[in-house]
Length: 66
Image 1 (cartoon, one colour):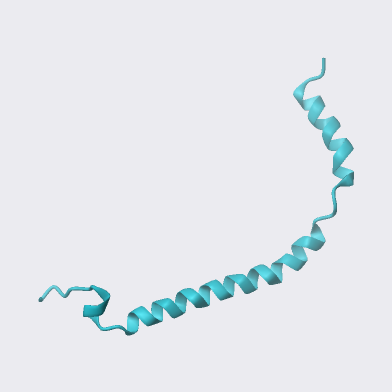
Image 2: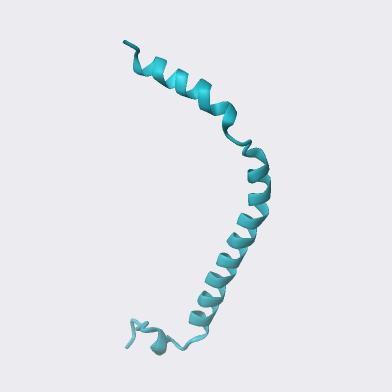
């Protein structure tokens, strides 16, 4: 009877050579990811800027002196 480690090694030896090389996927995904990250950051910044531009009463912020 084979052990789990032996089964894993047999699986790994059989299927790993058949898997595509992921290095090309990583290099093409990096610019896309950075672009998406910038888009999300810009969206958050624009929303924050809009909230900051509102008067305090519209934001629901109450002053300690009210």
